Length: 335
Image (tube, rainbow, N blue to C red; front, side, top):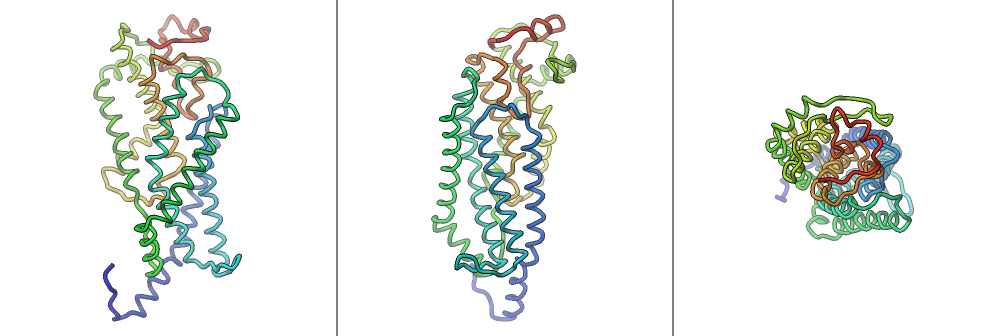
């Protein structure tokens, strides 16, 4: 960082000193909105969802956001106090948020990698309630990732030096994640490529879609079906996965496109949130279904993998005549 001129030093000190103080109220409102959105998404998801690593990580993220909100509110209210021999001021609001931003910014790749491996290995298994050992494994994996990331943030010389410099000069910029940008770009690119490959199938299938009530839920019936050799089956499956995914997450996909086109820079502590993780979760589940479709033996428990998207009717070969038979069938084998 370039040396600061001594001219007007008192004014520079005063303005920079008050910057985090003025921003604390705005930060408190932002975190309050984020925590409310996290709780809303956790509340509206399906209750019978199959337990997974991503589900546990979303809960841990919501808890950490809530903890940060409580800390910001507590420090903002008391402004300057001592606790356990440590003095806390409003500058710690900036420091804590910076640490969280750095941590969130480097979590996208590890979380997606562990989650896609989890689905790839378990999506083809016979659905059954998660055992105590499996739940314990997910909890330990989440704890290990958080500890590893925090250790990386606090111990890496470049990051710790950046935090120290910003704290000394009373500035409070927040980290912008490069991982989230490339991940969002990759997801949008894959969706666009899939749509280009299947555009004729998508148009034909959308025209044939009927909305009915089936087993006490509203579902889409894809009455269009073509000859099912291996290549055509996989193309139809890709088309149905694309339609089901966009049927739930189309607004989020358009939002990602707008952000990418505008080049908007969103702080990492805002960008990593529960809706974003569930959006990625649905994309990873669809990817696992696509690659493991020949190995999947579908039963009712398989459809609880996703808290928001029902993939059930991507696989059952519905037409106008066999709706009743499909409802009675207990198991379906793909291709």
